[in-house]
Structures are given as C-alpha cells and as structure tokens.
Amino acid sequence: MGRAMTDGGWTPDRVIASSAVRARTTAELAAEAGEWGTVIKIEESLYGATVDEAMAIVSQQPDDAGYLLVVGHEPCCSGLTNQLVGGDRVQFPTGGVACVEVEVPEWQAIETVHGRLEWFTSPK
Image (tube, rainbow, N blue to C red):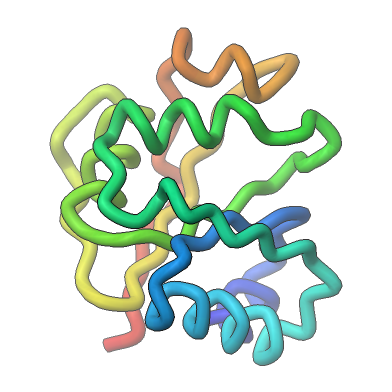
C-alpha cells in the first residue's frame, strides 16, 4: 500500500501509528515500500481509541504536517473517516487506506469541519 500511495502521488508528511505491533509494523512497511522520509509517531493511546479520542489525537498534530496518515484499528478507522466526511460510507478491510481532504488552517480545527473522501482502496 505504501508503494501504491507513492505511485498515486500521495506521500504522508507524518504517520501516527497505534502502538500495537501489527499497526506499527504496517506503518513501517508502508513507509519503506513507498520510500517515504516520513516521521512515524507511535501513539499508545490510539490502541483501542474511540473515534473522539482519535480525533483528539489528530487535532494535536503539528501544523507543518500537510498530509497525515493514521494507522489504527477497526472500528475506529472507519468511524474516524466517516465522521470526517459526514457520512457512513467507508468500512475498512485490513490494510485499507482512505484519503480525506480537509481544509483547515491548523489540525486543531479538524473537529469543526467535514472533509471530502478523495479515494479509498485496499490491498485486495
């Protein structure tokens, strides 16, 4: 998925990954395959996070990260994506990736907007 994202012209500036071994390894393998020079921040509180908790984690990210990738777990990833786009359209399979475009001056404002689902894909 990391190579597919890079090939599609999308490389994250920052990756937030759950502390779970599977999520952390997924983030590391995607970064390696995509040849990203990206900061991967292991976020322990993302493991088992609710949608609101995940949104709070996103809102705390540095504003110089224009493209942010969250590597977490279900049902949080689907819920976070759906909350960001204001609907119930996305259900993540293992390894699924969604790109949601949000226009905010800073990540702290993320909770006040709805974004647009640009694309959604999975490894299968």
